[in-house]
Length: 262
Image (tube, rainbow, N blue to C red; front, side, top):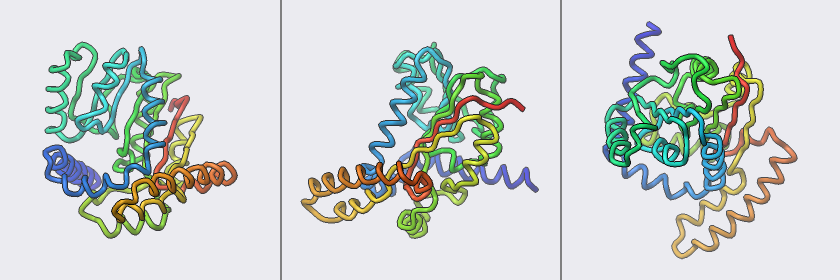
C-alpha cells in the first residue's frame, strides 16, 4: 500500500508540473508573481550561494523544471545534472541545453528527487528552490546526504509553515498548489540535523509581508517599495534577536553542510 501511495503521489506531482510547464497554470502564476517581490532578498542570497559554490564543482539541481541548470553550466560548474519528475519540462530543458551548446557540461533526466540514482559521494552541491516541501523530507535527506561528497552542501529556498496570513492564503487558493505540499516546520529541520552536521536556516519576509497590501492599490508602487525596505530592516533586527521567529517567515534559505554517513 505504501508503494501504491508513493506512486500515486509522484504521478499527481508529475501531472501538475507538466501542466505548469505547458502554460496551463499561467493564470495562477501571474496572480502569485504579484507578491514575489517580497522574496527578492531571499532569492538573491540563494542565487549568490549556488553560483559561488557551483564553480568547478559537480552539481545536481533537483526539481529543476525548465530552469536552474543552464545558468550554472554557463557559470563555470564542472558538471550540472537536472532532475525533475515532469517529463515535458525535462524535454524542454534538454533542448535548451543543446541549443546553448552546453551538452558537455549539462544534462537533464526524469527522476525521483527523493531517491537519487547517483553514486555515493559523487556530487559537490545539491540545490533546489521551492522543491523540498513537495517531497518526503526524511527520504530526501537520506538520499542527498549519501550522494554528496564529504565537503558537499545542500542549498535550498523553501517556504515556512507558521505565518498565519500566508497559511490563510494557501487555504484560500488550493488550485495553485498540489495536495502534498507541506511548508517546513521545526520537525523538518530536526530531520535535516540527523543527516547533516551543520544546518543553517535564514528566514525572510516576516513583518515585510504587510507591504503586500499596496499591491492592490493603483499608483502605490513607490510606497510599497519604501514600506518593504523599512520592514525588511526591522525583520533583520527581530530575527537577529529572536531566531525562532524564522518559522513565522514566509520563506527561507537553508544551507546544509557536512553530510553524516550512515
